[in-house]
Image (tube, rainbow, N blue to C red):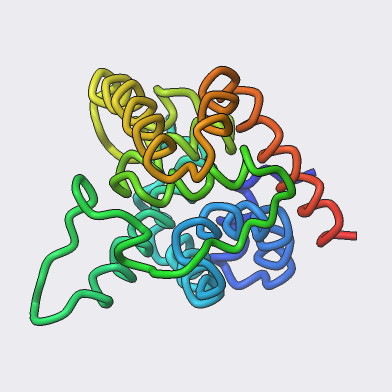
Length: 210
């Protein structure tokens, strides 16, 4: 089986089958990435992300995994999308603005339990840069070092951001929860509820790929 980078290089040379295989490997990954940030309006962003993989291939460092490279491009496409949503020349600030502000309406991840819905709603109410690090960490399994590589930030900065993101998420859950008992239950086992959301998304991926 060819590696991701080998497929990327082959795709750049014009081998469409390599591009198709790379797309099949990572399409659902990108669906997950954009799902709780832009909802249903993600197809164009997914398309632009894959195109960015070709045009930006020279920036793929030897030490960088394709997965980190892909998420770096996806983050850039997300930033461009949010900037297009701003009015009167306002700038997008990922350190203060949330996906709920920038993309009104619920995300497109469907879950059954109230605790899971609370986590998803709260994620959309913390600053985008904090939402991204939490979702890459919990849902995509990236280490803090890999996230630092993806976002081109110092490792220490990302570790600090992860700690702060967890605090902001808990605060947002307290504000969003209609029933305080749901917040208490979610707070006491956040890792568990996040894992269940991830399992739900993975099951959806498998169903979508079958």
